[in-house]
Image 1: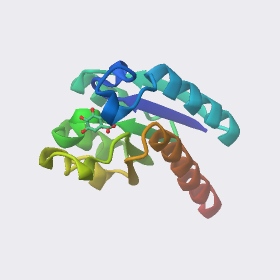
Image 2: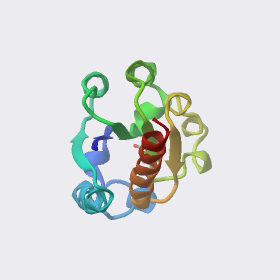
Image 3: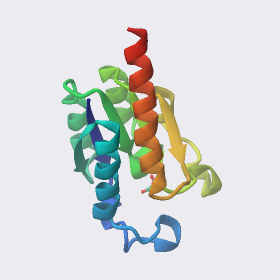
Length: 148
Ligand code: DQA
């Protein structure tokens, strides 16, 4: 099974960006642990990072040949109707993840425009949120397989 991983804006700076909130792991390190877990779960991963809303919309629209999406929409979580609509349009198992607990932070981070269109959301476990998210996709996709 093939999974598209999308990291949103500013996540390319992980490891140096606001480390008290986002931790010291770089995006490369997070991607490496995702790849390791993917092997165990039997997933093929394609990993993308973009700082541009429209580019993320394009990636989601082009995801037809994937089985699921793992996405950290970063700041677009709270603002992007376009990304939400793209997820609704492709109708594909999608897990939203956040390193920080967005419900424990500023008011403007407490709502996600993406969550109502996602299969589920994982928030607050640092880099581990991504790994839990990939496991969640594995759970969803295996459950789907057994019911079809
Ligand atoms: C984030 C939370 C967002 O509010 C923020 O804009 C980010 C990262 C997280 O992973 O905790 O860039 O998505």
